[in-house]
Structures are given as C-alpha cells and as structure tokens.
Image (tube, rainbow, N blue to C red):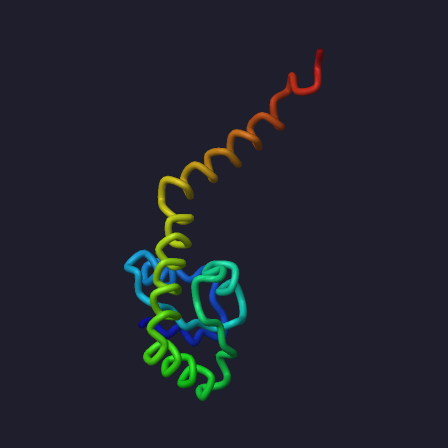
Length: 107
C-alpha cells in the first residue's frame, strides 16, 4: 500500500502513479488530494498519525476492502495520462486563440 500524509499538495503525481500500479492508497483528506483520488483511496486527516495507522491496519486485514480499492484505483488512474493532459491544454489554447481572433463576432 501507499501512504501519502501530505499537509499540502498541488496535484499529487505520486498518488496517480500508485493508483496506476494498482496499489491501495491511504492519503490526506486535504488540499487537492481528494479531488485526485476520488473514491479510490482511504482519506484521513494528515495531522492524525493514528488515523493513518488505523487505515493501514484496515487495508491489511480487510481483503474485500483491499480488492475493491485496487479496482477503483486502476479505474481512477485511467482518468489521468499525458495524452489527456495534452489534449486538455490544446483545447484551452485553441479556445483562447479563437476568442482573440479579430473577426470574432462578425457576421
């Protein structure tokens, strides 16, 4: 499993990498982390080490939960990728360029 007790995270690339590998993830419930992992991780407060310990024990002993979380992680990780990121950036750039066209709005 992968534990990610970050107090602040801009995106969380290690989370996506762990999910792509099918590794169960325990992560902070703060910052951008919940948005990145969706329902594919156990989320706990980063300032409570005992919460991380409980989540680790839970994943270690509950095989059904671990299996379910692994399945969710692989699906969630598929939402991210360099092709998708590049496509989203390209779409934004094309939209911005279209809005800046001098003939925009003329009939």
